[in-house]
Image (cartoon, rainbow, N blue to C red; front, side, top):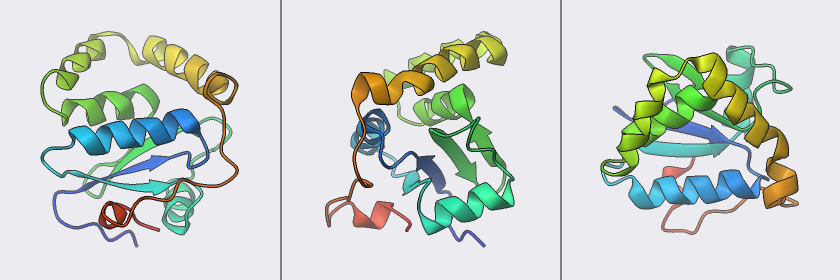
Length: 138
């Protein structure tokens, strides 16, 4: 179904969200081990994963982390796992794993709910540059 190269992780993001697009660009800049690939939730691959894992996009609509071996991570857990692969000092944020998920996700949901109001929204998904195109699935 979703064919990822070995040892890659796929970040699914809201392609029209300015905060999400900025976050993706941040991950690309700090992904020194070239671990991550990306696809918008709105893409064909994104929709396949949403369907396969029966994800309610009314409850989870901003960021997901997919790995073939482990499936899907959501919300704050996805964000923290992504940060854990970005090296020092970004990986220090994983200290927040000590906070129970229901508290982390409450904060995450609050930001996600307000992301369009605070950061804006694009009319269409961000298009990566030709140099970055290999990091994206469509």
